[in-house]
Length: 179
Image (tube, rainbow, N blue to C red; front, side, top):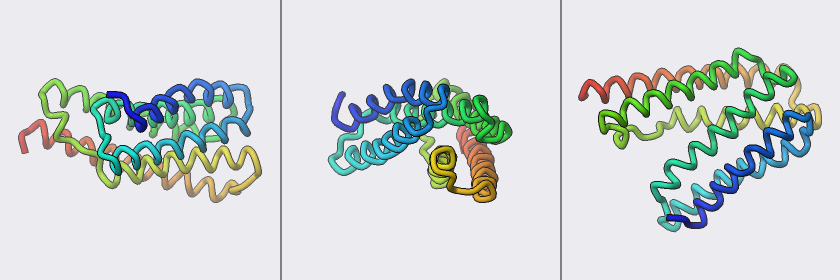
């Protein structure tokens, strides 16, 4: 069912290619604006869906896909085009997403997908990944935050991402074993 929160999510999905082109061509001011708008729309669609009881299966599927498309493309391009984000962090972020995708696929084969819900650690990880991209885009546009703050942010994001991957792996294995 298409509703306002789902339309907002679809707009975010359509913004991903525009964001990719902006980063690829070094138009970081535009990339920052698009990214900021997309991040706000993510908060807005979730709020509206919960507040007005408009949560749909389409939204449940599209929202995390929109987030991952934006986050993963941002990490990949900001590592690849100018080494603005360390490659090791991009590998960690993308590997976690591949692991979660594979785990979801396996759980769906065994009809156990509906039992795995996002965790607080997973949500904190997504927030940190978004915030790290935002901070990197801000640095490219206005020089803030400085390199040492970004370094701490890169390291913290990596720790949360690995911990979240381990948590989801543990929960998936536990679910498959019938626990």
